[in-house]
Length: 256
Image 1 (cartoon, one colour):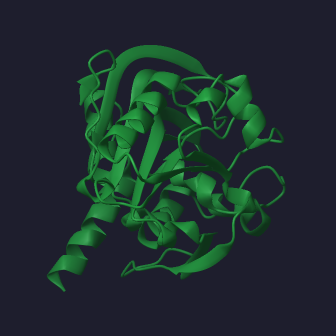
Image 2 (cartoon, one colour):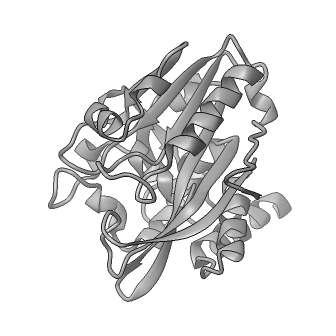
């Protein structure tokens, strides 16, 4: 953890020799920080990756949660100039898909999940999430680097009533489905960054309408679950039960 002003990113070791690096930022809404990640944090991560590995191809992959296209969101948020020097922006909804098996000893709903094949075609994967708290069914839901991975799942397969969202991933509940998300694709990720320059707090389920609170912290590390847990602890937010459950399941896998 560092303050935003002193944030110096250290990429995972897998990035050093990687030919291809995938970065999954939280940029799915046509709204600026803290609903989406800040230009400062995204730019610092991309610039550091380029310095760390000058020859790697870097793919920034996101799937939107609104009728607004990904490229329009990038333009609105003033991020277009970040995509130079072999840094390519890709819309997750337009990429070829494969089925990822659920490695959990206790799958919740999905024995496998569809996500972009590029996750298996790169050498390093990094999730950059925003620190947000919404409320679903009266319970607080913390979104950080793991929840950020929702944007990788195709709306064509996981939509429900709205074609712009992934309603199937809300049943029976987001905290439960996040366990499947981790054991299908989350375990593949080599690093996580949580942008806590400002915290986002919503009174309800809406992840793009709420209150912005100055916090001035950035969290990063090699393990999504540990980074999200530390971000919640320092931010004095409730540590979500899904993080505890995933850790317990991981420990049971190690013991077996």
